[in-house]
Length: 160
Image 1 (cartoon, rainbow, N blue to C red):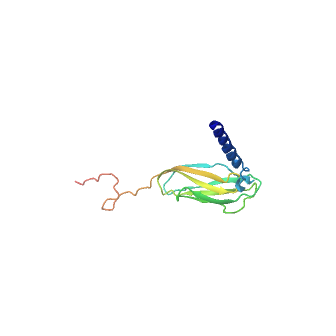
Image 2 (image 1 turned 180 degrees about the horizontal axis):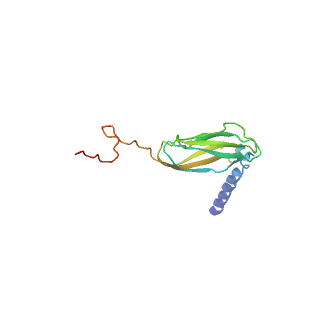
Image 3 (image 1 turned 90 degrees about the horizontal axis):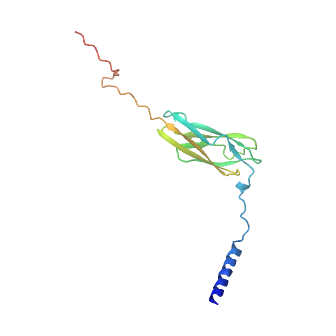
């Protein structure tokens, strides 16, 4: 008898939990229902080797391949050394192309891999772009001797 009551209690509990969890499907967000679509030519750029304080700017080209205007609401670099410039809150019509310019501070020697996260009203509302490369060390100034003359390594001839 106890087993039968316990079984009924478990079934009743299971039924009530299932009844409460059968809610309507979650509403789609505006971003996922959007018909705007951002298609990049490439989403990773390798600078290779850059000289110290050299040009660390690259333009990521993209096109709105969707059916609605695309609006980029924000773009943020993964650190302060990576700065994106983008068409802020400017509708990009279907079929129209634009660029997101990313500038890396090349006064930081060594290897780097940085990202920029783009937020928009596209089908995929968040897009990550990546830049990477290597910045050569800062050039060093040649040391001059105390007499102010550059030592070229030659030995002076002695007069006899």
